[in-house]
Amino acid sequence: MSTIHVNLPYGDAELGIDIPEENLIGVYSPEDVPPVSDVRTEVQRALENPIGSKRLDELARGKKKVVIVADDNTRLTPTDMIVPPVLDALNAAGVPDSAITLIIALGTHRFMTDAEILKKYGPETVRRITIKNHTFKDFTSLVDLGTTENGTRIMINCEVYEADFAIGIGSIVPHHIPGFAGGAKIIQPGVSGEDTTAETHLLSVQAPRSWLGVQENPVRKELDIIARKVGLHTIFNTVLNRHGEVVEAFFGDVEAAFREGVKRSKKIFSVTIPKAADIVVSSSHPCDIEFWQAHKTLYPSDLAVKEKGIIIIVTPCYEGVAKTHGDMLDITRESSSRIREMVKMSEVKDKVAAALAIAWAQVKERETVFIVSEGIDKETAKNLGFIHFPSVQEALDEALIRKGAGAGITVLTHAADMLPVLD
Image (cartoon, rainbow, N blue to C red; front, side, top):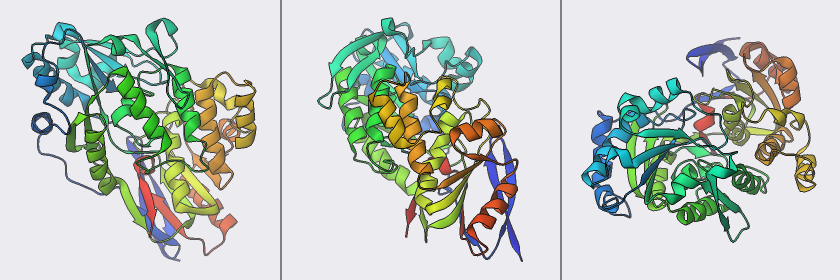
């Protein structure tokens, strides 16, 4: 039987797998779009052509306290090349560097180290302005802005809310909670308290499947409302290619610029697949740090596989499951209905983790999940409700035994950022 060798990205390396040619439906990746020739030139172009708003130098004129809210090192946004031109535009509006603070939109992720901050935002940004980690658990650093009409309590970073002007910086990719990352997501969960994040995450799992790739949905609506109430009206978002390089930048109104960016993002990250597979082999790249990021692999895989099929997740997870949500392993083997009941009865403290555990359970209730990971051992995988394999080849061989010699196989090389569309 002839085989086709496929290399899957695995952190900074690759893992190879041999797939029977007659079983292979296809190997799918985001479109390999060439990047812009010069990122700073593209940043300047976007700043000079705002979407749905005035230019940045006009918006910031006369402001005394400006906050930049920028994504963290779990994202590939090249903030080191974006922030300096933004600072220059703010300076042109009369805002000195001393009046500008960058708040890292950690959501509920761990703090970034000084070395990570230097790498992510660059020496020029570190030299020019103050940079702070968002403290989502510190209630003294948050302001209570009441609730949305949907009942979501709005707890937000004080410095962001108290600023005269705020701009959010991030990237637009398909995302299982609000449809696409980017736009208002920089505020929620970016600089929100954990209760606010828990409520929007729990809202996202009211549907049986994720909102991946669905632009207009209840969660996105809630995020837009929260961002407006906080005072974030302006964003700078990039769309990247699968190598993390800038393809196009979008600056302007938090909703209008985001929606323009989504159009470009869809063209890059959507992949048409002829049919659902019995087995889907998926790399988590570029979401490799911990399973809190790598879990994004589940939802595109869920769209590409048949019900009762097998998903094989290939991910390094260098930092394990979740640095800031370690207790979630106490509930991840439970069913989605049981976790919902636990949330309702206040039997879980970490409702953000509970929301993701529900999302994972909903996938596991449809499909079997194998995992190949150096950062997640056999016992941890068992607690997650997954089956651990030491190599991707062994996982595939077992999947073929279970699903039969004629099983169709699909490979997603950058699954965490992909949007499979069945033809």
